[in-house]
Length: 159
Length: 446
Image 1 (tube, rainbow over the protein chains, first blue to last red):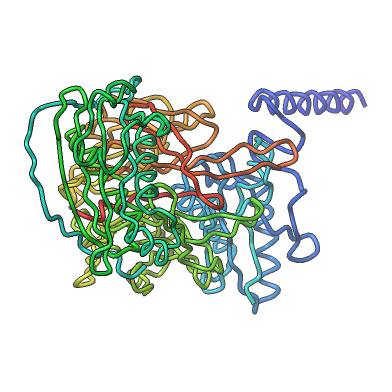
Image 2 (image 1 turned 30 degrees about the vertical axis):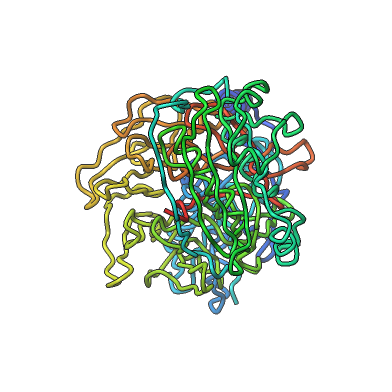
C-alpha cells in the first residue's frame, strides 16, 4: 500500500517535471504547441476515422516528432488496408523564409514523411511528393502559432 | 509587345566634353541636383498628328513628364516646378537665356523638340549646364510613335549617363509576379511593366501558380517556375512570341532558375528525395550538368557577371548561409559569417558585390557584401522582405516586401520596393495589383 502511494506520488512528480521541462524548452507554450511544433487539431483533417492527414515540423526542421511518427504509422496502416490508394505528400513551410529555400524545405519535409511511410511497407510507387514552399499557408496569421500550423506535410489522396 | 526592339537611330552626337556639372552617385545624395526639364516643343501640325495617333494632347509635354518623373525617382535630381519657367520651350531649345534659368536655381536644363517626320516620331534634345552657360550634350533620334514613352526613358538614360558618368537604368522593364486573393489561396500571374510602372501586362492567366521569373540578360527571354499540371518545373518563356517550354527532363521539382550572363545556360535547383542540388542546362545542346553534390539544401544560384563563379544558398552548416564556388562546382567557400541566416545571393552586374536577404532576430534585411563576404552592409530592415534584383547599372536594388497580418489574419499585402545601393532613396514601385519576385531587365537600347 505504502509503496504504491510512493509510486503514485513519484509518478505525479515525474509528470510535474515533464510539464516544467516542457515549459523550460519553449517560452510560450500555448497548449497548442510544444517547442514550436504545432500539437493542436484546428487544421487537421482525416483520411479515415482516426487517421489524421498531416504532421507538423519545428522551424527550419524536417525531423519527424514522436507525434508525427504516430500519425504516419496510422496512415501506413490505413494505406496497407487500402492498397489501391495512392497519395501525394504536400510539403509546406511557414512565411518566415525565402521563397526558394522554402520550396526545398517543403520537399525535404514531404520526403521525411515519405521515407517513414516506406519503412512501414508502403511502396514508393504509391507516393508522390509535391512541395508548395510557403505558397499555400492554412493560417494567414503572422504569429508563431499560425506559422506552426503552416510548417506541415499533408497526405492527400491522389485517386 | 511587338516592335519592341525597334532600333533607335542616333543621328547626331556632337559631344564636347567640358567637365562641367557632375553628380556623385556613390554616396547617399541629400542634395539632389536642381534640374529644369523644359517641355519638349512641338509644332502644331506634328502635335495634331500625334494627337490622332497616340490620343495624347501634347506628346512633347508627356515625354518631358516621363523624364521628370524618372529623374525624381532616381533620387539624384530635383526637377523644378514648370510654373516657374520663364522661357518658352521652343526658344529655350535654340538658345537658353541662362540668367532666367539661373534665377530659378536650375543647375542643369533639358530642352528639346518633337516632330512628325514620315509617320515617325523624331526627337532632339539638349542638356545644358546653366552655371557655365554651355551645352553639354545634343542628341536626336527617330522611332515609331508608339515608342513615345521609351523616348522619355532613353533621354533620361543619356542625361543620367552624361551627369553621373555611369549608364542609366530607365529604358528597362521589370518582370514580376502579380498577386491577388486571400493569403491562403493567392492567385499568381507573370506580369511585365516598364521600370516606372507603366505599360503593365499580364503574361499568364493565373490558372497555375508561377514564381521567380528572371530575365535573360541578353534577350527578351524569361525563365520561371510554373506549377503547370501540379508539376513544379522551370520554364522558358519568349516574351515576344509567348512561346513556353519546360527546361530539361527532370524527374522532380526544378526551381530557383537564373540565366548565365551570356544567356546560354540556365542554372537552377533540382530537388529529389529531400535533397536539392544545383544543376545547369545548356540551352543549345541541352546538356545537363550537376554542379553541387552535398546532402544539404543547395539553392538560389547566381552567376558572377564574368561567368566564372556561382554564389548560392546552402544549409550545409546547419543554417542557410551564402557560398561561392567556381562555375564547375569546385572550390566551395562559405562567405557569410554575420549573425543570422542568409539567403538569395545575387551577384551585382558590376561584379564587386553580392546582394542578399538576411533574417536576424525576427527581422528581414536586404544587404550587400563583397564577393569574399567582407564589408557587409544592411540597406533596409522590415517584417518581411527578400529577393533583391539589381538594376543593370548595379546602383539600385528592387525587391518585394510583405506585411504582417493582424490578429485575425487580415491585412496581408505584397509590394515591390526599390532602394539605392547607398541605402537611401527607398520607394515603393507602383503595380496595379500586389507584386513579388521582381527581376530587372538589361537596358533595352544600347
